[in-house]
Length: 449
Length: 169
Image (cartoon, rainbow over all chains, first blue to last red; front, side):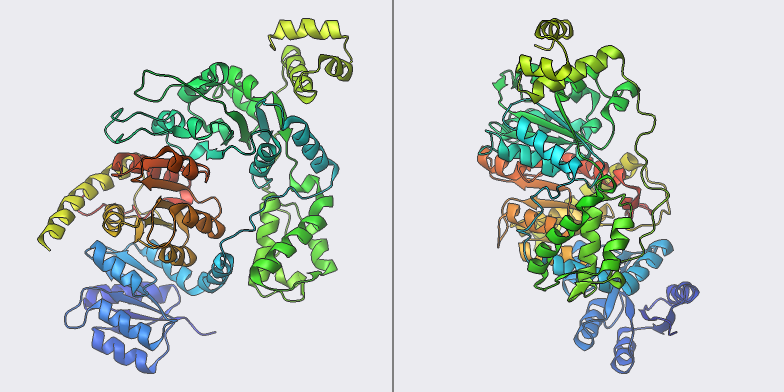
């Protein structure tokens, strides 16, 4: 087997030798050029797989070498090295087609990683990326696909709760489509014409949460050059979707609770409050009750958010939906990649059905997309799919789910029944097996409005 | 020409401070191997994009300025993005359109929107994309720094090329 061939263009002999040694140790076949002219001569009659080029060299500098290389062989990947990271030079190098640049002193781990990236992963990933982005994706997943009992149940709950204005808590592993559930609720609700504002709570720095959520007035802090609405007022008349709600800072949890109670917010630096009409949908891939017990999430906020709970089942618990999902994705990918894949071979279906999908629907989508990138034509074959071993380290569903106290459980059940029957006490009582009078007493006892 | 030089010098100084701050905020240990993702800085005002990208570059992030959406998309097709700082106004498309197209390539990409347009409707439109931060221009570097520290520290894989001291540090 041939070793990948790397051309190193470096005028400093010591650095050149160091690179030769390191690269040879990693299994590359290294050719050294001490200056630009020599490099150009070498590439004109030899084929290399990658080039490492120093930017600062006397006579012919690295950028000129880069131009020559690209003129000669546009597919040859060039990594630039520079001891002086001037923005303009780096950007110019990238615009002229360099793959990346490294700043001296070189970090060998970084170099090794980069070389692997250049030589191994590049072709597949580039293919996937270019296919993916050929069109703006108008075909983003919008539908909840599947008729399994688990999904049917989810859709029923969505239809029931959409039009009430009560908060919803969505639980499910990552990749199960929690945002799709939230968006579906929004679309089927009376707020469909209003904005749907999603926010990933884990990505917002704790220090900035308050102004992100509640906005700020001009001059509230040094960077506040104008009034900003913040998330709540941006979602006014619509739905605010708090993904990864367990990641909210304790300070913000307290403030959020107040907003839920009083339905008004006060921007940072303002003395005025603003009424907001926002429906809250929260989601988490954790068991929020456990987080409450661990003391990092407020119990009172949990109760406020958890009026209706929707648990989106993981794909391994609704394998009956896999064929429908495959059909759905094939239709989308055929359109996007302009192919005509008609179906999937039986052994490929079998492999997919036997698999556990720790990454859930998103993982299935990625597997099929990869099959397209690898050139699936008439049908997806087993060979288009990677090894699908059930992973022993697949996420374990919380085995030691905490046991709520009877009171908690009772309160929870009653709240859910009320939400489910849109506050119709008679229906709720019937479903719970209570008399209406008993139900009223419990409602009072638990303060459920 | 002279004005340009002076601007760079000042920015580089700010860049050192940013680099040092980031190093201490993230607390990255040295010599950590990296699979650094890129930070895209897209802004129809090219000077502004270059300025912000320059500061990030000096903090040893891989940052790339683009004034056009198409150029930003070219970068996204070539490299994994870890963060996009996108202005609502680009030369060839709106920032919101660019974000939608970037997300088709990199689903779940964290996005910071910047805007020199202080109208509330602009903010409402941007926020419906699910963004991490909405910043009025001029960009408050302290905010950006906090966002970067949060995003890039959250994921060990994303721990950056911060394995050597920044220039001057």
